[in-house]
Image (tube, rainbow, N blue to C red):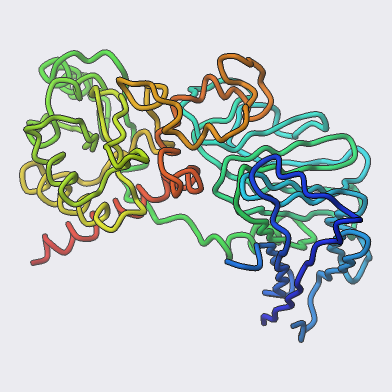
Length: 434
């Protein structure tokens, strides 16, 4: 059961509103699409114009364009308001999007990960969605972005609802006493609403959209050890032998610093090991040469390679939006398997991280689209912790913002790694069958 309803959102006349063009260029004409995808699921999308309601649903959308765009999502059997932009401003520019919704007094919101703080989000709290290698810092944006949230209300009929705003750009969510505001540095407004009314019903409907997690092999659920400080493969081998000596079960063991010893094409097997695929830069490194020949790596605007620094040293990064990256990744994993058989792959740095600020060597910030033509709070000359939260500490993540496409897809870089690795492992299974 699905139906669509589309509406063109036209700008007010110049006498009513003046373009601000602060964060790029104002988008004057927008398309609003409302999809009644299921009885308990509603999808609302707002996109630039230039890039039908026919069934019953538990949710209803009320639209009013004058004097400004107002969108309300209500439960049609109770009249309870799940989302309302009434009295709020909508800003839509090519480098800045903002919209807000009112919230009831003393609301209860859960979700908005990934961050370390109280389970229930407070009403004076800002959550940044910008994948970053920041360790386990309290109240900071961490490795992943999970922008959905669950709202509960303490009465029977309007008990629970969930929203998912889909946007891969860096963004902030501002929880305030009577409203929630979403701000992003680009993209569109793409919202999913789940009516519930119970938490279990909301979660089930949500899983129908994002799908269930992959079924894991039994060994992945066992004991894994990974740490910094193993200085040689011999030391790693001794640790494994001691596990055997004391009859302690262990499935995998990984030594981060051993990556500095050997490149992945010349790694020798130990008793139990994790396979780590890092792409170190070396002119005689075949893995790098093949990736460079196929245009598989992120580049600076002048078409030179973006050089970062990770655990093995200077490194380049796969560009998952390029035509050659997935094929190169699959080929390298198959060739590696022929030398050292493995059962799976440990994906590290999936938030995309570099220890350099800008391109290593020249520290050029002008190459980096995470430095748009306006000042961002949190940069060295303006140390604050609001937008993006801890930006100065997040410069390590700037590799994802080298190209325009990566600027827009930063929070999905890890998803690209997972997708490419799944295809590579599937190819290895095919190789074994042949």
